Image (cartoon, rainbow over all chains, first blue to last red; front, side, top):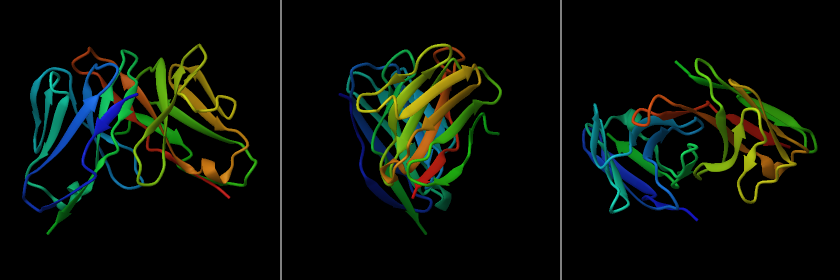
Length: 110
Length: 118
């Protein structure tokens, strides 16, 4: 089976930085996604890492180490609207099948 | 704007009835689409892979006779929940990969369909 682990909850203050870690042990690996999901809505795409290293997109950055089976999503300059669930998902095959972690609920406080 | 749409967004039905959910890719063709189910406070669980022109492939534990999938065209996949029961109440989400070269591939999700079976 697929094993993708991420913390259940995290809380941070507006303007701060939060790092969400994701470790994975999967039958295959063709890239790792991070999605943001607000309650009652579908996930929205944040980042996709297939090579080792850091990908930066504005306030969001994602890092991947394939040898360690590890990724993190870094959220900078937190805003209240960043309060959401963040899903780590591994593309385990060439047909784009994704296996999701349980999600990390981030709460941003004023 | 949205690149994958779903219809309906919300449906309430009586136990024993069938419900059809449509998933459309709006400005690209998708030979493959995926159907997920999400229960409250849980992550997305892949139910099946919808393949244009061929049978869907189902994940272990998902009843193919209960969740009928038809990928009628390169932009449309439908999921029919047959003889729905209260335990089928969930958030159903489809997704479609948009392939643009391995480094820029991404997968777009539809807005989801909230199914409530009374």
